[in-house]
Image 1 (cartoon, rainbow, N blue to C red):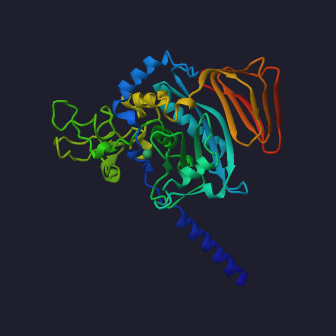
Image 2: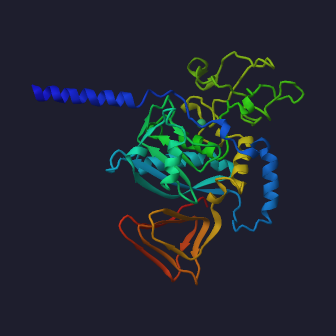
Image 3: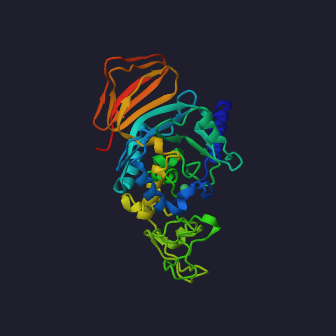
Length: 393
Ligand SMILES: [Zn+2]
């Protein structure tokens, strides 16, 4: 009898601790990435992009890439210290990755999976998004442990997403080169945009209801209207319909079959809001967000391209060159190193490539990975060398 009581108590405790861990999630995206982390050029993304592309011809920094932009991505599934409780399976992560490509490929952006691994770190796996802890704590932890991969955008998938207040992801900044997502969203059959939404922030996109300069976006698109502010307020994209912060808090009342029907007008121009229910940066119901390129507008595309081409930004050196020529490499620490090219990664005759000890080397290219004489792979415990054809050709 006593044994039974103990067992019951244990079951109760487990149930209680589970319910204390993760609250019920709303039927739409919520994330903690705020507009104040803005890229300076974003108010003039189109002009910035045009100027940058014109200057690219004389760029001597050694980066040689062209559209479609092949953005290297490294997926890191987090687990407990003992290797249990992974954020998801590799297959599920790749499914989410493929869904993201479906939304971005039509906009000349292709994500190249250069590697996928597991991080055994109980602290990171029990991600606590409590506001008090969300003060750079995890961002710094990720950076200080070199979990963010040089040369690739890094996606972390966490088993627990504690004290989340409904949040299921975080891009830490706009723009940025790594993001975190919750297990529940990655594994939910109802969610197909969690990677794409957080990646949108990493590529410079704001929420559709954002209030840049503290300005609620008005509805009018008439530049002669004194209320016109879509170029200086809101999400700075005039081709995303005006949205407002609480639109989705009321979506259960006002969005039916993905049609928005609230009779609600902007105070300045008196025009009724009709926010997009398919845009990837909205908080509309998960099932409404588009699977295809219609999830992103042309203005949003321009902003992502501006972010990608900004040589001072976090994405530029994570875009795959058309060809990567391996220079002399001598690596033996456990840091992940990626070598990803749009078409070919190739060794050079007079250079030696040496990966030994705990070094982790990932080579990925759309057409060929070529190792020349002088290449040595002798991975020790915890080390590996991985070469794959992975691309968008
Ligand atoms: Zn967001």
